[in-house]
Amino acid sequence: MADNNKRLSTNVDGDFYVDSTCINCDTCRQLAPDTFRESGDYSAVYKQPGNQRQARAALQALLCCPTGSIGTVEKHDAREVMGDFPLLIEDGVYYAGFNSPKSYGGNSYFIKHADGNWLVDSPKFVRPLVEKLDQLGGVRYIFLTHRDDVAEASKYAERFGSDRIIHRAELSAQPNSEIVLDGYDPHPFAYDFLIVPTPGHTKGHCVLLYKNRYLFTGDTLAWDRDRRRLDVHSPRYCWYSWQEQTRSIERLRDLTFEWVLPGHGQRGKVSPKQARQQLLEVVERMEAL
Image (cartoon, rainbow, N blue to C red):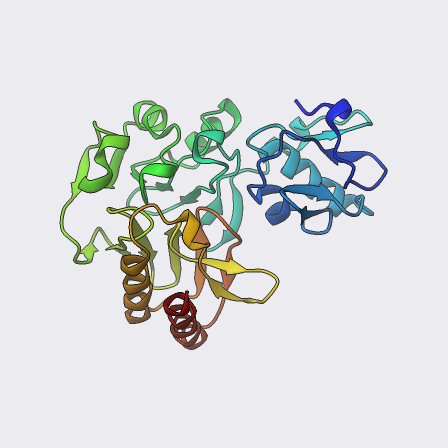
C-alpha cells in the first residue's frame, strides 16, 4: 500500500499521489496518461482526475501498479475496477493488468482464440484475474518472450493446465516448460501465430506475431509516446548483445504488423508501411550508438 508519508513532492496537491517506492515502470502512465507523468526517476501525478473516465483510469493504474506505490487521500474502493481486467485492446486481444514486481512491472497480454487462449508473459497471480480468465475459457498456451518476464507463469500453468512456450536459451527461468524452442529461425505455431526469435536483449528472446497484425515484442521494441514512433530501450537495458538486438530489429522489417505490444514501454499502432520505415530508422539510431 502507498504511504502518504512517503508522498513524492513532485505530485500535485489532491487525492491521488505516488510515493517513493515507485520503480518508474510506466504502468500508471500507460493506463492513465491524463493523470501520471514521468518525473525524474519516478512517476508522479501531474494533474488530478477531472472527470469520471479519468478517475476510473487512475484507479486502474492504482490497481495494476506492481509495487503498490499509488495511493489516495480519499477513500476509494479499487474493487470497482477489478472487473475491467483483462482490458480489451482490440479484436480479442487484451492487456492483462496486475503487473508483477517479479518482472519489474512488465506488461502481459491475453489473446482469446477459438483454438485455445494465450497468455503472453505473466501478470501477478491474483484471484480476480484468474476468475475472469476462467470465464473467458482459460489459458491453453503461455508464451514467454524471455527470462525477465516469466513472473508467476508456473502458477498460471498449473491452474489452467497450460503449455508454456519458451526458447531453450531462457529455459532456466522456467525449467519445467512444456514446449521448448530451439534455433533462431521463425517458428509457425498453430493457426494465426508465428514465433520469431529475436536475440539481443537476452540470448533466447522471442516475439510473437498474431494475425499479421499484433506483434508482442517483449523487451525488443516499444512505442515512444512522446515522439509518436517505434523505438527501443537504451543499450544499458540490453543484457546479451546490442549488435544482435540491432540485427533482430532489422529482421522484423520482414514481418507485417500494425500493433506493437511490448513487455516494457507503451503500446502503439501504426500502418504496416509506417512500421517498416520506422524500423529502418530505429536500426539507424541503434547503429549510431
